[in-house]
Amino acid sequence: MAIIALEGMRLHAAHGYYPEEQVLGNEFILDVLVNTDFSAAAITDELYEEAEDEDEETSPNTVNYETLYLICQVEMRKPTKLLETLVNRIADRIGSHFDEVSGLVVRLRKLNPPLGGRVDSAWVLASRGDMDIAYLELIKKLS
Image 1 (cartoon, rainbow, N blue to C red):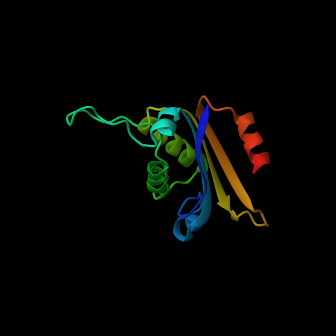
Image 2: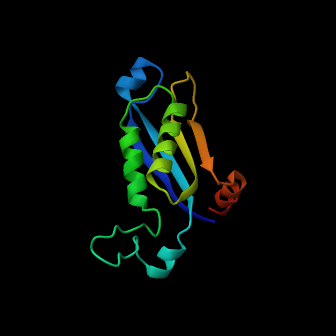
Image 3: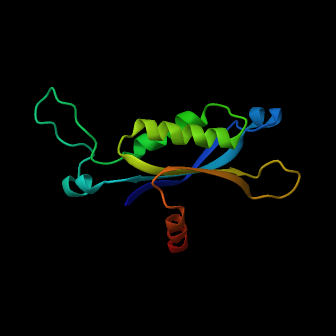
């Protein structure tokens, strides 16, 4: 198992159930972890496998985290009422874009949600495929 992650993507976006949230927006922190095999990239030090001739398509050796970020950025720009809908949409988009992803976790935190009292964040997590959530707890303890 190999994990590629983007943690702490900070984005301002207009997500929320209430009209004022959709106008004013809020601050969000997005974490994405994908399970993939990057052994070829570790050996070749290349994102893509070299094509043997010009007409062949190259295949990825790993998951490009710049592409992960762009997918997240695009989905975060689409106003959504529920965080549940948004994390599912991001997870589905990543899963359909990368054939080499065998599992993934997407966690979205809304900072200072408007609940009438002090709350640091509200968050929603979605997972797909082969991703051991207990393993993620170990990573959290190590960091």
